Length: 116
Image 1 (cartoon, rainbow, N blue to C red):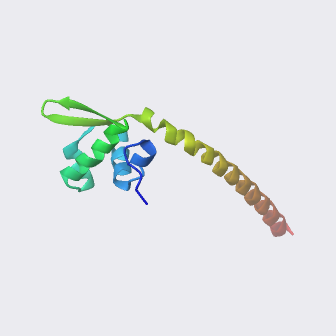
Image 2 (image 1 turned 90 degrees about the horizontal axis):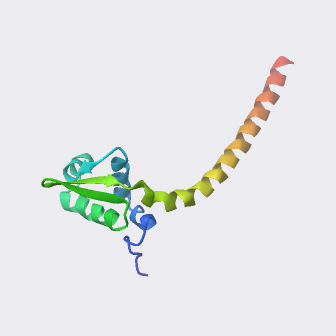
Image 3 (image 1 turned 90 degrees about the vertical axis):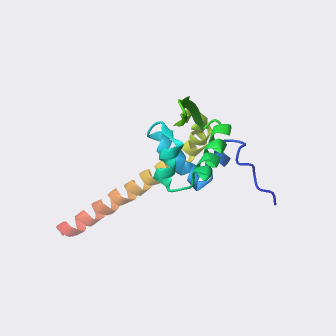
């Protein structure tokens, strides 16, 4: 079975754990390739390859500052992921609300036993 191309969309691009780490670091602000190499302890060619994939799907922007390339996160490109996940967030919130109700009931039942 053929592997899905990693450059088709943000979902595929961030499916790779190292690219998610890069996205996490860029969420804190603009960084150079060398900073990412130091922070992730990966070889520069590997970081550059991951950045290329992220750039091709629009998740990161690059700007030149003299001889240095600085990368920043394009959060708007992650919007489809956010939109997809928020449906599941609603599901989990509903489940946590139900669990809170059960816990409150158990606390109430436990409190009446202790007073007897």
